[in-house]
Image 1 (cartoon, rainbow, N blue to C red):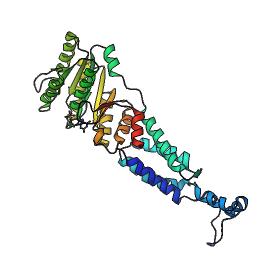
Image 2: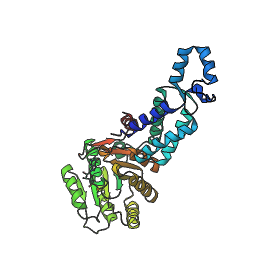
Image 3: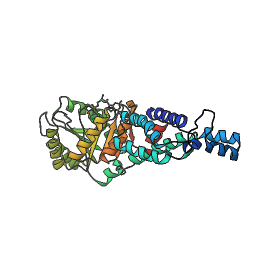
Image 4: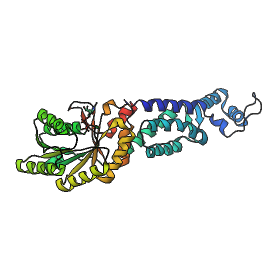
Length: 338
Ligand code: GDP
């Protein structure tokens, strides 16, 4: 998983170390004849002796600004192609430039510096506000109402079922609200999970008002002393205006304590666009990113946090209920860097 960075780092380092000029040659005028040594080098040689000079020239490099820009272009492309948001790439560029350009660097140091800079910048980008702990929140607020939003196919229903399974495992009861009354088979799909998990589900007919379904589920939770209400919603893509109006209404009626955006790691830039849109229009508190197991790139996770400035609650790492991990930035960054 996420081996793109390894390749990018190796290629950047190779270019930086093999093509950048030896330190002593940077400020010295270029020799006119092939055999002639730069004056600086001659002076250095006299002072240090031949062996030491050679070692120094071979092992120390200084990367000039122009050359840095040239080799960074390839790393930049690699990061962008792997869905790392442009803002983060720019921050990485500034930091690397500061740490590499014009510095005397020993061989091997370049790789260490870019690894540690990338790690720091990515971790910094991921460590936003801490996500709420659902178990603690469920104990403090009864019922805790959670609204799930996101476009179709991103793994929203699966994430709702995984959340229910996670809560159940921790002794928290829940009820599902089938508020996607728009997409054919959505109610049956959620019902199948409810049956498997043995949790109750509140449903109306297709075409019914989704806000009314959510309202009934909250009422049901209050009456039955159920800890958490998980509301599924429609995710039609073709008419965002209707969808956003519908979600706003559900929000007004069900008054969720948390609104969670579901996004698909594999959709890259689309996921980032969706994150921006839902965050701007509806307001989200956190995201759940599914299909991270199938994502070789990994940049989506970083970019969604950057775009929303909201934490990631869980990542989906497979199709089973237990393939659901609390998102831990440190662990994620360690995975990226192997
Ligand atoms: P929805 O339309 O947003 O409700 O999406 P679904 O929950 O129906 O998920 C769409 C597909 O993605 C299904 O085949 C799921 O099994 C699959 N899926 C969901 N989450 C994950 C995940 O974390 N990893 C993998 N590999 N597949 C997932």
